[in-house]
Amino acid sequence: MLIVLSPAKTLDYASPLNSETHSLPDFIPRSAELISLLRKLSPASIGSLMKISDPLAELNWQRYADWSKKFSFDNARQALLAFNGDVYEGLDARSLKQSQLEWAQDHLRILSGLYGVLRPLDLMQPYRLEMGTQLPNAHGNTLYDFWGERVTKVLNKVLTEQQASALVNLASEEYFKVVKPKVLAVPVITPVFEDWKGGKYKIISFYAKRARGLMARYAIDKKITKPALLKRFDTDGYAFDAASSTEFKWVFRRRLEV
Image (cartoon, rainbow, N blue to C red; front, top):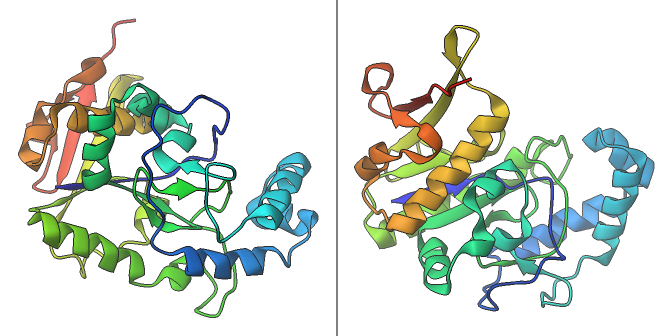
């Protein structure tokens, strides 16, 4: 079983690291190709392209200028310990032990607009480049065109090595669109998280993102390699709802007491 996650917009390059074990991204030359395109943009153009504020545009303009093909702890840190959004608050990677980080390295992947796909311990320099960005390049007009089937082929390689039976999609729709399910060697299982609100169950973005991280952490803690065992996921009150699920779409619901 292999789990895929989305990255986060929020980054943390200040907190102490709980591990120095690291690896390098698979697609550094490809990332450099994207950086060369981004360096041609002014801060104002970056702000317009990404629909972000002037201070964020300036920050990311500087990040692109500083980006290097050489990765070290002076300019990078492990991806799982750098991302800091809702998903990663649920996963709480900074509390993982070394053995858990190593397990995650084998069974978890993070999809990325700039890096394509990252292993948890791959060194990552700070950036912002969402997968849905319309960035004209030599391969088309979008990052989906740029990455083509490369991300899927890397995932397939891992799935084959593991003799895995499924890929578990805990990524957002925007990011998972870079994966080509028809090219994958295994079926895709997509957990969906719903909360009770306004008299019915619905997906609430903040809670759903956090729940994806919670499920990834659940898999790491229990070293789950068989997807069916994820149906036992019960963190923070969620429970598998068989009646609302299909073969490959697994619905988890909770009803919080008010």
